Image 1 (tube, rainbow, N blue to C red):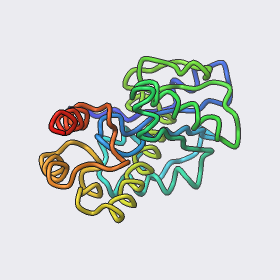
Image 2: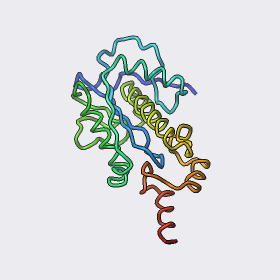
Image 3: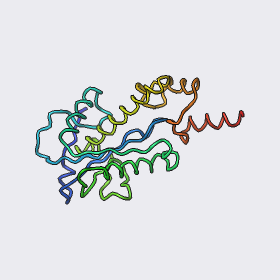
Image 4: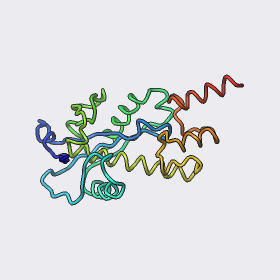
Length: 208
């Protein structure tokens, strides 16, 4: 299969000159925040010495190298929503709010946003691009920033709560993670509206 790397085609088609790519990471895990990132490339004619593509298709080493280059050569910011906010809003709307926060935190306000997915957050001006992290370099860069940021958050949380293995599973419902939850219970980092956690709370309440 020929892998086509993302480029600036979609950015160049925009009427606006200051275009941000926006993406999020962490919709599926049982715990931790959902993290969004927004990235503006000040110049689109520069040589990029690292691979930038959908973060899910990159090795950890390549992603870390890309993260370092992106953070030093672009305008970028992150935003997040906590587990409590995810429970209050649901994960879709929490992801939208995290994207809005990322854009609001940028040192330069974009005129237009390219959003990964099929929905534009209500407070942003832009267009949704399905599988945008495989098409747009700005979105791909945002996907890398979002994932690296979230992974680092989970690594830090794993030092505080080592029994769950968050440094390895990033909060996703792996078998070992579910076993740890069964053995040690949950804490404030968990999303209580998510299926396995919600079911556990329900069972504990019914057994009281």
